[in-house]
Length: 216
Image (cartoon, rainbow, N blue to C red):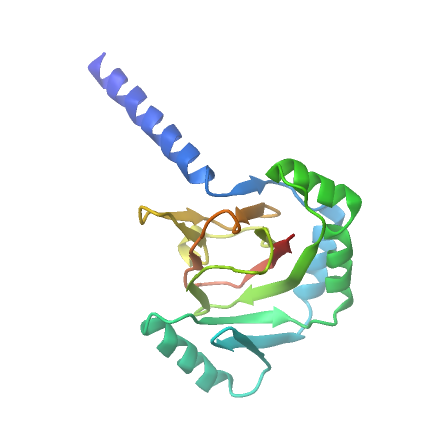
């Protein structure tokens, strides 16, 4: 009987922890239409039009020159606890990116996001498709002046948690809440009500694909 009570108590604590974690973000499974996400993956997985993307401060540097030295510099910034990232982004003028933008700004989707968040959402901003190869990362930062909700839509059909690449939200008490890549899962973070420091830990294996942007 005592063991049963201990087991029930552990389950109760686990449920409380899950509820606590989920208070820092909103999520929805099977967000994109099945045919649309399949179309996105068919295009981006077979296309070589990716640009290596790093930063100098808040300025994004996006081209395929000097990749080795830029990767070295991004790691140097990371190890100095300065804002830094290393990743690839899909070409800005791609037709599929335009289609994604139109999809996410459709009345139906904006209504859905408004209902999920409890706030009136009118449009998106700064949408891009990212690819994190092994060794790529995004250091701790806060999104500011970009929108009301930061979002990410995971595109990998399967993902091994051992490969890293999870989004981590840092609470005020210093707890790191991991959100693992799950196929066609939408994650929303309220970045206007209070600071939501977060990061993507280093990808260790395979390529991690996602759509990122902000709802306003």
